[in-house]
Image 1 (cartoon, rainbow, N blue to C red):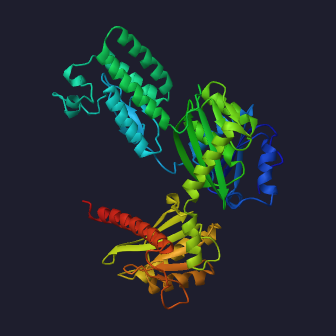
Image 2: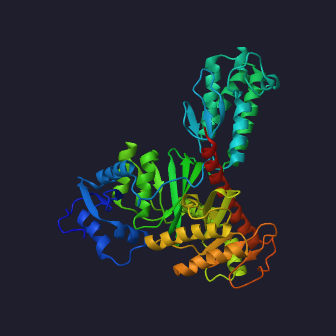
Image 3: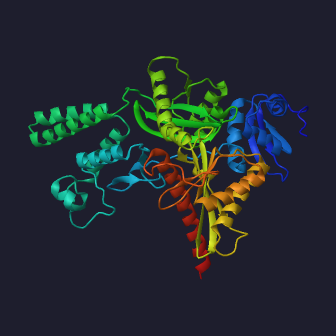
Length: 516
């Protein structure tokens, strides 16, 4: 039993450990005694926190002078210990960047990760928008895209879409000025660049350098066209991040928009377990690895210490704003709409699956099992999990078959289903809304028998290859689903992902077996 009576009432961080002494959770508090005591006195804890409390065997704490110091210390401790019950911030999606290299004649190209020299702009949400912009910058400013300067001019040089530094046609200073202007576009200062170009065009016309003036005129026209396509152009002189989320069935679906001086520069998506204070923890974790902007727009108020913590990280004032009306509230609504589209756009196929399989609840969480082997050797099992109609890859599982010899898919399915759900029973984990088996009536019967033995009542179905027939317990014939209707196509999508995951694991084991 954890003794909380002697805990201080000052701010600080607390560390929960398990029976092996491993740190399983790090938290911060304005009042350590009050916060830690709440874990053991409340009866309305969410499932994840209940699981945490059940695993706590030890407590340690560190007092800080201020709440801001507690924020800073919490992130240091989380990075050091990687606790099991702190939220795991992994991008739900990764987007590419535009990279301008650090060379005498910098080149511009697409980069998947910002892990080299030079400057990176993005990430860009739309690949089409990114490529259109990249194409425009290269042709507009004559920037090179070749990995190495060629000895002879390439096709782009001949058609005039590259300034061809390889030929000595342009000096280093003039080329870098072109790069600087391209970066002005990437930073969102299109209006400022247009003003500069207009001034230069007027000066060139005065000097009767009409050919160069016409070149600038074409650049201005292209930039004005680009500016019109910008979705968010609010003429700001500072950067903003806009955060909004939807919490549903114990999971938080969160999206963060990066706005660079009024121009939407990119977005990031996250999913994690819903716990008390999850928004403050998200902000603390996220901005420990990303420089805070001058303003953060949120849908709900957070502790005043958050602004102090972000200001500390930035080295300058950060405003945390919760708008109730006006332009910023409209932006919050826009982010929430994107959350709904990104995470809940598959609600229709979930509703259809519920109706066609006669399920008692919406199949928000679906787990699917598959077996892979080569003539009975290196037999493996896979389990993939879909949440709200999308792959939940951090909860995929792989199984090396232990108890089956030879080719026996029925016994192999039974083993992996038993291992998965007996463990969930033991750990008090959440069961899915639907279990899907890759196979026919035999595989379904084997899995159903395991669930019956374990006393688990979760809807289960199987989908057989070739005819894509769907079977459920209690019926000798497949359900009357057409293979091209929404429910069937969704089940095929899940089954195919489980098969892909199993094959990948199987190939990995085979490579290890034949390796010299």
